[in-house]
Length: 257
Ligand code: PEP
Image (tube, rainbow, N blue to C red; front, top):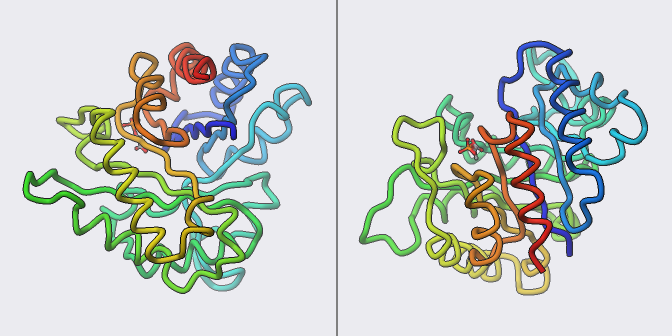
């Protein structure tokens, strides 16, 4: 199976022109990539613009969104519905990112969003991760809660489009002391997350769910995380805004046998 690398551009860049330039540079750098599926998640407003790039560029990536609302339409000022995202070119949505949870997003809202996205036929990426690492906690309680809260009452038939991203909040580069986790810990967490999914969903459904890691991944550490971390790919924030770094990062993962 191909590895998955998601570029979370967050609220960057500032203009459509800069977004097109970044996508173009990444596309030129990644020609010939075989073993990695790259998904770009720009701000909502750039989706329709990026989707109308020349054929060769457009078909190198899938586009994704960084959030969504769970209703299909109606009086929800400022929100964006799954069918609107899909019609704008998104094929995947990141849900429950720690930056959204910090603004008040609950496990219940995350669960509704996951259901809405899966029912609309897009892939849903559930982000889970602890704020701090307590030496006494082998499997942080909050990771279990976010995981079980996110997948509550989701139809097993929809899980083919479901992805987990383990993103310890303390490891995210935009945090003041953000520092990448170690491949050894990511390995252990990926096993514990899979074990929890097995328990909740049964081995058959759970074994097909990719588990990604995110948190200060760059061109230097990406390959080691994928090779030693028992993960199926990466969620990349800061490094995805620098075309040169992001291209090297994806190429390093593409080389892994
Ligand atoms: C993120 O915020 O999802 C993330 C992984 O960011 P960074 O790569 O900058 O740590």
